[in-house]
Length: 108
Image 1: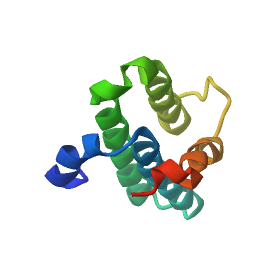
Image 2: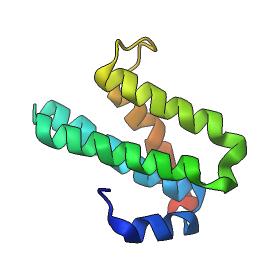
Image 3: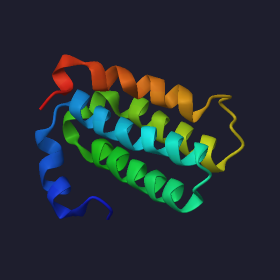
């Protein structure tokens, strides 16, 4: 558990755009650590990203969007440690999540 127990309690208080923007922050860190060739921090950011995605998947409010959120998880794992079968990049995911960061509903 990277984010501590507080985030597990508060996560369901966030809107979906807020949750996605927070996931996007970790994805953005992944891109930065990849560029710096820092595998330790890259792996830590990857683990934190998965933790937040899993918290979002566990949030019962988003059952209808479960497939999209699960697909993001699958694509992230494939980019970082798979064969990149989806032919995408961390930068593509970073751009996807940036839309949530810029969304007015993602502001606390």
